[in-house]
Image (cartoon, rainbow, N blue to C red; front, top):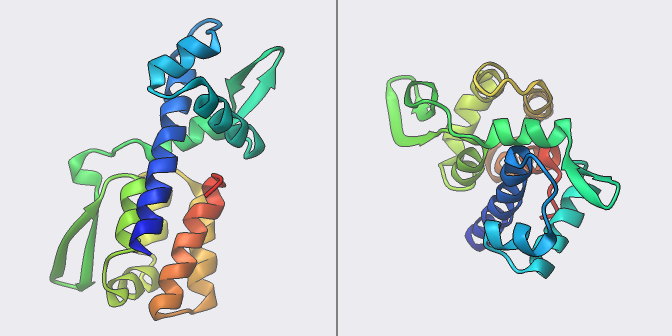
Amino acid sequence: MRDYLHEVAFLIEEQMKILRFMSEVTGRTDMNEFAQKIGLTPNQATEYVHELAKSGFVKKVGNGYSITEKGKAALKAFALVPADKRFNFYVEIGKPMDFSAGSIPELFDLVGKVDAASLEFHLYRQDFENWVRIVLNDESLANNIACVRDSEVKGENLRKALLSALEERFSFEM
C-alpha cells in the first residue's frame, strides 16, 4: 500500500505541475519549451496532458490545450492551506496524533498511514467532510466522503473507501 501511495503522489504531483503551469501561462507555448519548464521530457508531458484531458482537467483548444474549471478546482484543492486551517488527526477527543494535513495529497497520504481508529473517529463525526467543505470549498469531495460515512464501513475497508473517494473525485489516471 505504501509504494502505491508514493506512486500516486508522484503522478499527482507531475499532473499538478502541468496544471499550475497551464494556469499561469498567458500565451501559446511549444511542447518542448513546456516540457522543459515543468521538468519532463516532451513524451512524458504529452502523456500527462492526454491523461489530464481524458479526466476533464484540460481540454483541447485548436492545436493546444487549456485548463478547465475542473482543473482550476483541483489546483485549489491541492494547494496548501494556512497552518491554522490544517486538518489535525486525533484518536479521540483530547488525544491528538501528531499528524496534520494541509492539502489533498497530504490527506491522501495520511489516510493511508494513520490508525484506522482515527479514520473512524473523524469520519463519523463528519470532520473530514466538514474540513473539505469549509476549508477546501469542495462540495463534491465532501459528498463523496459523506457517502463513505453512510456506508458505515470500518477498519481497513474504511481506509480503502476513503482513498477511493479521494481518487474518484480527482479522477487522475492512477
